[in-house]
Length: 169
Picture 1: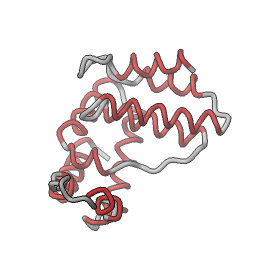
Picture 2 (picture 1 turned 60 degrees about the horizontal axis):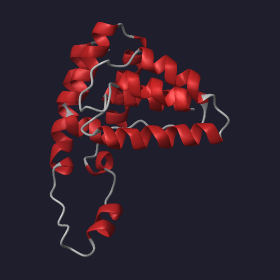
Picture 3 (picture 1 turned 45 degrees about the vertical axis):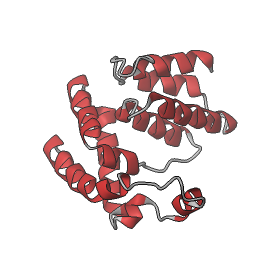
């Protein structure tokens, strides 16, 4: 799939997801949390689950095998289409390949809208992988090599975050 084809699909899905992603939450409602948790997942609510996940998987495959220039372009797509980035998480499992896929997703999202959220996701993925007996350090270093060196929010670049996590594990 070309970058243009990926962008066309991601843009279409982003437009369908945007009203869901930007829907206000009335935090004065005492049941706001229950209502939020009982709502269908965004991809299902938009009726695009299978198609959107297929597109996200294609983006991950391209990102994992791309050169630096294409990776920059793919990260830019995920930055531009924030509703798609927010909703289109490829599910992973507690295997080496699942852990690597989770890391590649983190790298592609490139800190998303908030580095703190991405750090929590990274640490949780590492915890799950360690409990499954996976050598997290090797995968972290491999994915760090394909990650951005730009410090977007003052907490380090995705590359330095992944390398620091590898060092700590």
